[in-house]
Image 1: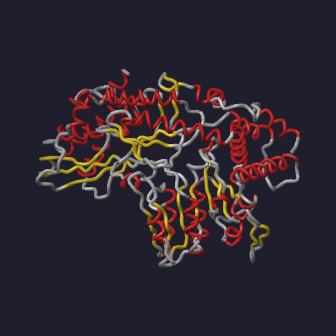
Image 2: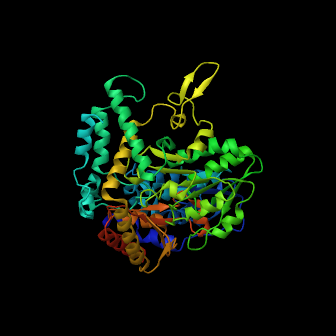
Image 3: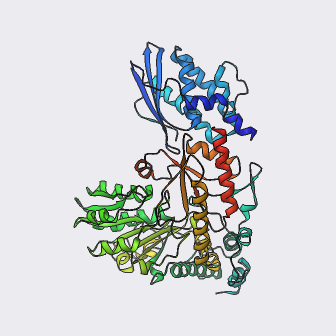
Amino acid sequence: MADLRELYQEVILEHSKTPRNFKQPAAVNRSAEGYNPLCGDHFTVYLDMEGDAIRDIGFKGSGCAISKASASMMTQIVKGKSKQEASALFEKFHKLVTGTDGKESDLGKLAVFSGVSEFPTRVKCATLAWHTLQAALAGQHDAVSTE
Amino acid sequence: MSAVTDTLHETRDRRPETAGFDVNEVRKDFPILSRTVHGKKLVYLDNAATSQKPRAVINAMSGYYEGENSNIHRGVHFLSGLATEGHDHARAVVQKFVNAADAREIVFTRGTTEGINLVAQTYGRANVGAGDEVLITAMEHHSNIVPWQILCEEKGARLQVAPINDRGELLLDEFETLLSPRTKIVAVAHVSNALGTINPISAIVEMAHRRNIPVLVDGAQAVPHLRVDVQALDCDFYTFSSHKMYGPMGIGVLYGKAALLEAMPPYQGGGDMISSVTFKKTTYNKLPYKFEAGTPDVAGVIGLGAAIEYMNRLGIARIEAHEHELLAYATKTISGIPGVRIIGTAKEKTGALSFVMDDVHPHDIGTILDQQGIAVRTGHHCAQPVMERFGIPATARASFAVYNTKEEIDALAAGIEKVREVFA
């Protein structure tokens, strides 16, 4: 069961049970909805942008432990960052969870998601919130779907 | 039947019909069951999605391609005759299996979904008009919702939905109230794929027929588990898929009463569905060919026939009894695990056990079980309105077939304990 513990790391389980920024911030000027029609995961990401900077971020919705923990930790790491920095982080995170880049540098706490690369069916869970964030940053109005 | 096909049929399965039911012997008929997954013995409990295939089916199909392949209803040559014979034989096997009055009432399709679309697009388009109603139930699979929505949108008709109770049973009184003079067709699942509920088809048909409304039954989840007699049910259409009943993917059956099929316009145009074509006028072929345009999936049809012959050899009654015991054992075992809740607790059930766990999403349950070699389905099971009815995003579903064992259910229970451990 070593593999399972790689996926369900303590930090991930803890974030899934008590997600951070799991609310709609007081001021919101952008938001987007993302869902995975195959498993029913469904999140809304809310942004309070000041120019290109993410002043505040929150999310709501339901999903599996991986998708919820990923959303929770994403909100923590991108808060205060610029749109470009957030996009660059997503690119690195995507490489991490798809196993296309061995390096876990620069990702800080997000490195706990490296185990996802061993579970190809769960990559969409880990990236759902990030795709939704991208849509919100781009001011996209249609809901994001993983399919 | 020719000597060649006789030999093939003989070698397809050697077990005498009188042999008793021994699940370990049955398991030997399914090559895939001996494989491992993640280094563990495969425990395949996703049969409602698709069942595994016995060697008899695999051999029948490869035997066709190796020794009989040819197009049917075409040539005067030997192989074409052989392929046509094999195809016709399978139709007769299907007819007998569901006790249709005539082989002309058995139309081959790509699956249950195509069967429903066929009826919606032919019978439906010819008979449903503006202001009319189509009545379904709240436990339908998307494939018995969306084809009717498309029809209703095109015609300006209304889709009515009969409600279910908290156990996942159809509310028959409410159903009857929804049968109105505007109802042009009723479409209902025989067995719910998400909940396992068996619907009282005879009662439904009786209520509808009293008002001269035809009934289509989605039998995808029933035919693998129950004896189905379309004449006894008296339904007007009955549709099912081969791949959920030990046959190949990509083939299915639509049964329709001959008088209705005769009156219906064709579904698709093309070869085989015509008797003569000129640029001025085309005469359609007789039943069932009118609804079978183009070269059919001959190997698929032969595979389906072999699957039914395999089920007949095991005996439907014995399959039913074994699966009934498995479901009862699984219900008792799984519902006894703390934090687990069964979704779908109808009195009459077969095939599937849907469940949710406190604070653990079904997707996580699925991954942890998979790591132990246990295959279950997680998600909304193409029945989002059912999930909404129960206020849950998804369930985990264990579904059973004739080759499953109590030991596998024990393995599932141990797997669920492992889920609890990971999420403790």
